[in-house]
Structures are given as structure tokens and as C-alpha cells.
Length: 593
Image (cartoon, rainbow, N blue to C red; front, side, top):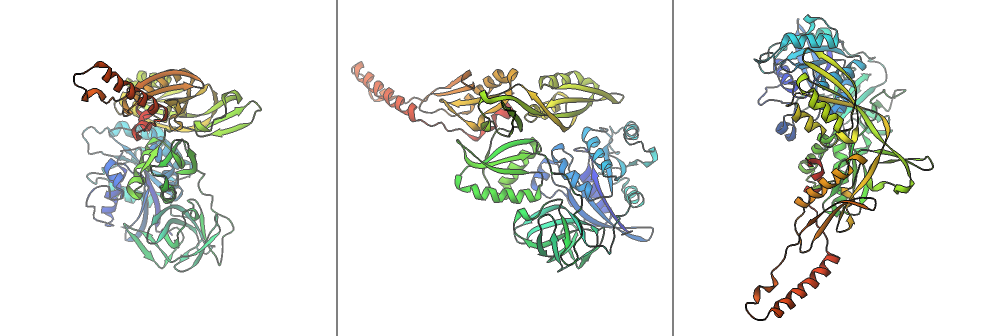
């Protein structure tokens, strides 16, 4: 164990974690880096240039004549994937805190850092992109010193592109990060921090051994689910899975035991042996709390079971996804899914399409509310369709978050205007350094789930960084806004919104739907309603066929007869006509402006 080091790389999005990981892999001769970001193995990650999953890999490195085993976990930087980061941190003893020397400390840097400090990790600050012309190493070092209270000489200057400072980082990892503590002779205790589904071998669980050791072929027990399996294959994580006969205390590895059912493996569970079980499970992670809820429905109703299987397999790979069955009048059977944010929702939708070939409709995202009735009983509602009658409601409480925004002083005015427009309350503002300020706002979560992040980026020219955490539920004046098509409510388009915004929001929804709905043989009335009161209306005009085309010359009464006949047909069609709503219309709400 003296020669094992487990560490992860944490940073804000786009600060060069994955590129730095490439240099570490090259320097330790683990792999030849052919094209960048070797650990980002999903097509989606390569296309978007972001890390979605945390990736574990083992490296060997010689220092002063001794051989060391380094287990590295590269983590995502976006706030929507912070659960991945918290799991990686639980499997490590130290971390590299990477800060971009051209941009300085950002919001996600700070929140990931606090997470690492809570777990008592040894933190090694690394200043990345020092080879850039616009790099400001002195100023950014001052920010890091203020944040961490470390000495200037403890900060390593590096560059993921040129490989500068990589040897210093490896030396610091070995010298500063403590080796894992544990008892080799105690009963086996291994913490599952990730899992992945393989269509040939079943579910592969990744774990870190806290106490004891594990041999191939041993009978193992998963403590939380109380299921027994045989360890058919165990090994360590290189670029591919690398089998081993035995793994010891402090090692990070994987186990294949032919598990077929997705629900039998829980991230945060403990593995122990059947022969000599441990007394209690390891204190793992807290359950993740989804922030944004949306309905996901298969386009073909018979694909419902296939969608369930796809979501279960995805959940293995992404433990922050939660789902439960629900049904909708307009869309049939589907699932109510909980996501950590809008990007997370978009990625899940994309992965369902690519990895499982599932074509789905996603409804308008919303958050969960606490609704109190006249008798003082509380009901949690995730969906406007599940709201009780307005006459029975005493008051509604909605979730609030504490948002922290770091920006340049030039953009403070615009950002304050944006936050006030989203019903935010300024808590405090602090100057991080000369021209950078951190603003703290209390805001309703419902206001930020749709387009807040995009607007923040555009008004600050990409400079503002944003991070948030939930604080509490507060009473609020909310109303249910229904969208009616030819008098029929479409429950997938109904939303809960604040009284002050409802009329504007209803009007914009109707205008947007008018653009998106295809014209039919009859007029389509689009209405926005609060209860029985209609607050906005638009009409999609009918497409008319020219029935009088075949009458050339002759008496006007012949033409009138044909037009009357068409009118009667139109009237009958209006009574039984169905409106077809394209998928674009369900997502229209996200891009109202």
C-alpha cells in the first residue's frame, strides 16, 4: 500500500483536465496518445469537447528507483455532472486542482474544491495553460493562495499542451498525497463508485478496496441488496480491462460476476466476501437529488418496455438519473425522469438515441413543488397535471437555490438585471480579485432550469461562471398555465408559472406554437388559460382546396352549391379533427426568446 496513490483531477469546465491527463498517461508510458482526450471515450464527449463521465485509469511510475502505482480519475467540469465528481472524490486520497492561468478561479473550481476539502483530500494546486500568450500566472497564483491559503512554491505551473511541469506533478502526487490507509487482514470492504453495462458480460462494477483483499473465483456479497455472486473476473483499469488473480487493500479495480439485472448494482454499495463478511457497509454517498423533471415518452407506444430497459442500463452508467413510470392523456405511457440540469437532460436524450436507438418525446422540464391543501396536508408534485383543484390549494412552496456567479466587474449591471428578472434576491457580493466579483443570489430553481445559463453566458460574453446548490422550499404565488388546442388541454405543454409572468408567458407560448404547428384542413385555435380564464389566443388558419376550379363559366349558383358543400364538410371536420403536434413544439418553451 505504501506504493499506491489514488487521485483525481478537478477543475471548472474547459480548464484542460483531460488534456493534462493525456500528458500524465504519456509520461508514465501507459499509452501512446494518438488523438487528444484519450479518456473521453464517448462520441458525444469528443464532439462537444466536454467530459460527461469520470474515467479511471491505472499508471505505473518510477521515482528515485522505486515503482509506484498511480490510480487517476479524470472528472467532468460542468455543474450538471457534479455527482460524478463527488463519487470520484470518495475513491481518492488526494486531488489535482487545475486552474486555467488565462481565466483564473471560476465558480465550479470553488464548489469542487469545497467538496474535496469535506472529504479531507490532499489538494495540489496546478496552474494550467502557462504556455499561452494571454496567461496571467502571477495574478491567478494570488487568487489560488487566497482561496487555499497555500504557499506560492506549492503551486505547480504546467501546460497540458506542451507537457511542461508534468514531472513536477507526478513527483508532487507521490510526495504529497498520502497512501491509502486500510487493514490487509480485515474482512473485505470495497466501495462501488461506478458501473457500466456490457451486452456480452453483464454489469461490470468499479470499486476501491478499503479493507481486506479479493481473489478471482471468490463468492462475494453486495451488502445493500444482499445478493451473492461469484467473482468470475477481477482486475485493474488500464485503457482496457486488465485481469488480475488478486487485488489488495488500496487498489482500484473492477469485478465481472455475470449480473444481468440493472437494479442489483447500486453505486455506493459495499462488496464483501460470503465466507468472512464485514460488520457494516462503508459510509458512501448521499442519495442524489434531481433538480429538473421532465416526461420521456416513446414515440411508438409498444416501445415502452424497451425504453424502461434502456433507462435502467443508462442509470448504471449515470447514477444521477432517476425515473418512475407515468402516463399522459396526449402521449400515452412513459417515464417521469429526474435530471441534475438541462445539459444533463439533453445528454441523456442524445445517449438514448445513439446507444439504444430509442426515439423519444421529452416534455417541458419543470421542478418539484410542495402543495399544501386547506387541511394542512402536503403533497409533492413533479408535474402540473398532478396538481389538485385550485379551490383546494391553500399555498404552494417552490424550491430555492443559492447561486454563486463569478464575473468581471464590467458585466455586474447586466447580470443583476437578469437575476432580478428571474425573481432573484441578492444575498451578498465579494471581490475575488482586482476586477472579478462573486455575486450570491437566492433564486427559485424553476427560473433557472430553462434558459438562465445560456443568457448568463451571452450577456457576459462567456466570462461569467455559475454554480448553485439547493437551500429550501419557500411559499410562492404560482398558477397553472394550460395550453389548449381546439379546446383540448395538452398536458405535456402545461406549466406552473409565477402570477406576474403568466400573461406574458402564455402569450409568447401561443405565438411560438402558431409558428410551429403545421396547417390543417381546419382552423386550429391555440389558447393559453389559467383555470377557466383564457389569457391569450392565436389561430392557425386552415389550408383551403379550391373546389370551384372545375367550374369555368356557367351560373354562380353552381359555384355557391359547391362552396356550401365544402363548408359543411369543414364544419364536420372541425368537430372530429385531431391536431398533430410536432416534437419541436414541446421544446419550443425552452427557446421562447
